[in-house]
Amino acid sequence: MALSVVVYEDNDLLRESIVSMISLNKQFQVGGSFNNVLKVEEQVKSIKPDIILMDIDMPGSTGIDAVAKIRKAGWQTPIMMLTVFDDNQHVFDAICAGASGYLLKKHLSAKLYDSMEELRTGGAPMSPSIARMVVSSMHKKATQVNPYGLTARETDVLTSLSKGNSYKLIASEFNISIDTVRTHIKNVYEKLQVHSQAEAVAKAIHEKLI
Image (cartoon, rainbow, N blue to C red; front, side, top):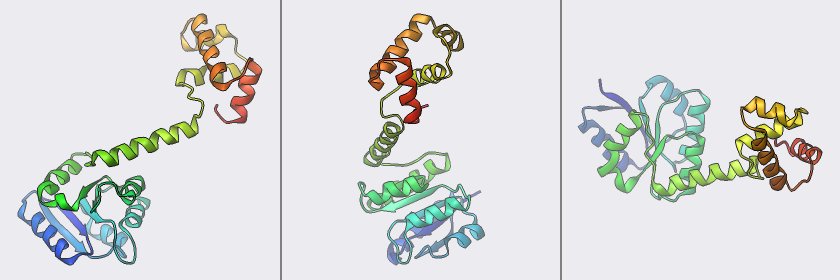
């Protein structure tokens, strides 16, 4: 059964071209095409498309706003953003809002079918530059949450230490040797720049590291 595709693109000529391309492939069918996203919620609810192709810059409301509305409404329909630039911050914002991937408009004729197929199978078509932005953002957030670079095990040991557990109890809890516990605690002290158990626990609690 052909997959239903909805197209949002304010350039009439380009929108008609995309619709024509979709119509030429028996795996897909056009469920609807629109030049704005002002009624996106009721359109998606009514059509229930399998894939959404979403332009970013449109009059009245942007594709990014539309993505946010679709996700807020609870629909998990794959959404592929259409853009002119592969380093556009708006693309990154759209992906953060819940878009599944993006396709450069200049590559529509060559990559539209493959990209939609990738979406259908759970993939996320995305250029290397945007992928790097996503990874960089994730690293940045991880650093903000854990500014001292504590490993998961060091955090576990520190949490156990805050409960007043002895080195022996900590070793037993995580099935590691007492020497390994000492090594983890030594590393925690160095990373937190403290010199005692009390200092380490106090700093971890104060800065919400545990």
